[in-house]
Image 1 (spheres, rainbow, N blue to C red):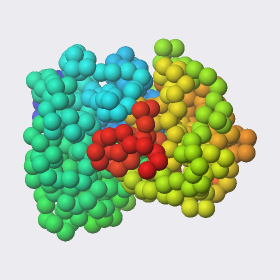
Image 2: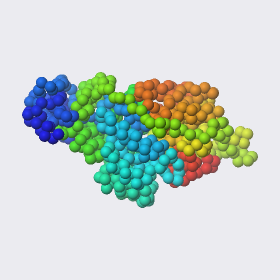
Image 3: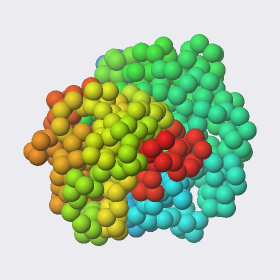
Image 4: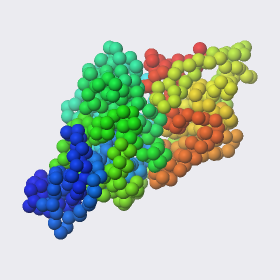
Length: 588
């Protein structure tokens, strides 16, 4: 291949594609170079310079850039396809028009349901895509051993096996940060086999404590982290040699605070990377993907070239793939965008491997639909039909009021607060307090059909009417989470998910108001992204009608079982205080 690129660059062979007269956004030099032509051969850049006329022949496709910007294809350095509610194929269909040509996916959602075979299914689907979908091997399944029980478990041997797969580029976010700091043998073993394979170890340090536990975690091997929410978090990570990943997902708005480390603190941006982490289908279809993140970063005061570096070259270098992706330069894959407005990221055309895939915000390429085998479906096993009584919380004998621990939702952030509230007792049962925004939450076991239900309380959704929303997407162990103000609706919602094989559903006063079916592992729909987005929008509207004003409340809902992010979470084991990593009682 290299000899053909040399021949095109020197004029001995015609190019497949030449784009003339563009403004070259050069992420290596930090310049925007006017009057640039690029020549492509065999899906790779062969020539980038002032005049590619020597590479034009009878069979060359010639595109006039007319002074528009030539931008490297955007990279999402950390994300979970399952959060889009769709398969890898449908996710790609949704994001290609927004300029994403490389994604680094961590399929730990499907791993928690189906184990290593589930990871392999997504790995193989990713290989068939017309863009670069690299896979990180999930590291923590379950995410917090002893505090939750997932549908599967992954071992050091599983990780070592996966490191030999064609499309595995590293270890996914190591969420068990106390385990790393304590030299847990499983965590240490997984990191060791990854490093021996010469691949990248992803991080996930979800604690504000930047003292000795943090230093121990970094010493253990994780090379990046996306869990920072403050400028000091980003600075601490970069100073210790990590990459600070700043995320803007559907519900996580962590760029604005952390980018001040660069814009106000003067920290070198070369070790900062942009990512999304979790984006649902509605965001992808209506607002965008990495173009949205770059646009937002520019609005926070970054120079356009810097924001683009953080979404291209910086990511590529981090994963040791900068000879393949991340820039417009000879030898790299010809993934690029033609952009008419750089600060606004107005993308006129998207090319991947030298082929035009989208233009004017619309997908032009044909990407065949992908179906999952039967083994990946029918994974919601309740063991019984639930009734309202399954959500009863008994009060101490003779009490007319109790003090209860309450999970406090924080808008636009993944962490929660550990709150307490005085709740009334009615007929021997602890009651909700709708007037003070305290409603009930339950986690229903769905992998082994045990019929187990964990009950607790949550605040922050603002529901004012009788309702319940249930989801089989419940990071990371993916049991069913149901939040409601009415126990009858809670039972109906959970039972409905058992009938359809998973998804998310909202009931009010016995009526189904919205349903997004996700039969693939109870996590993904196989329908088109735009169809799923329409159903998801109906869900959001129904939640608003019930009084919920949170931005992207469904994403907040789906993380309430994530027992590796402080402060208070729910699992099949019970209510978990993530500050101490201990099970606590609902009643104080």
